[in-house]
Image (cartoon, rainbow, N blue to C red):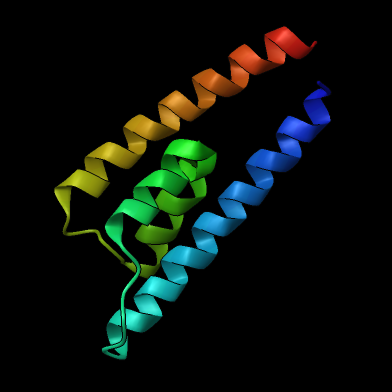
Length: 91
């Protein structure tokens, strides 16, 4: 497995995190069907926590939910640990 593919994956999952959070914020403002919180958590768990959390802070989305404001930083640390472990395996 090439490490470049891992980097591309993390970039893609983080971009997805940004898009989904922005979409959910838009839907919240316009009283439309919302994206499930479980979806936001799954994206964070799969590696999208850094940009998901940054997006939440920037657009002020889910910032009153303690679970997101505490849980996403924990997932960021886990994402970084996984990235480091994969890099050691690949390089």
